[in-house]
Length: 202
Image (tube, rainbow, N blue to C red; front, top):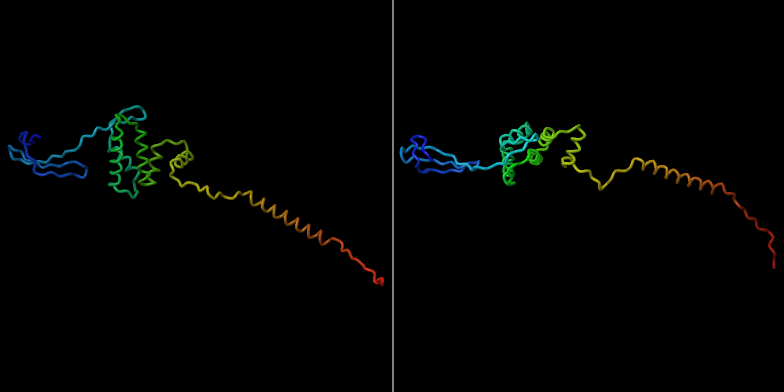
């Protein structure tokens, strides 16, 4: 490390501190002019190139991802620390893939998955802008496919609307048969048997 004051190449470290962003801050003193200055060390990560829809290639940019997530989370109860955490998780995921190139749509899907866990409204906002839909019905079907809406309970199916008239008809027919039977029993002629009054004596 060259001294910014005299250009001398030798110095000594007086203090070392680890920053929140995993960087290392060092306080140094030049061995020649005794001037003191601070340096910041960060890890040089090699991010893959992002392939856009039109075929263009551009470097991976965490700031661009942060801006996109901030736009989706506008006026939502989400803190800046949460957004930065999402960006760091996405950046780590991109690096661990170990690929030199990655499609923008793959990163977009990862962002949607992160927003879905963070805030439902932000997820819907981002999905409506990131994806192109022909109409509202296609948008709703896509959200249902992504399991955003609650699943329909199929354990207890609804009663059919045609079941009630059928049951009423069955009850009506049964009642009519009962009435018919009662009428038949009532209208039956009464058979009277007469016995002779004179009994034959032994």
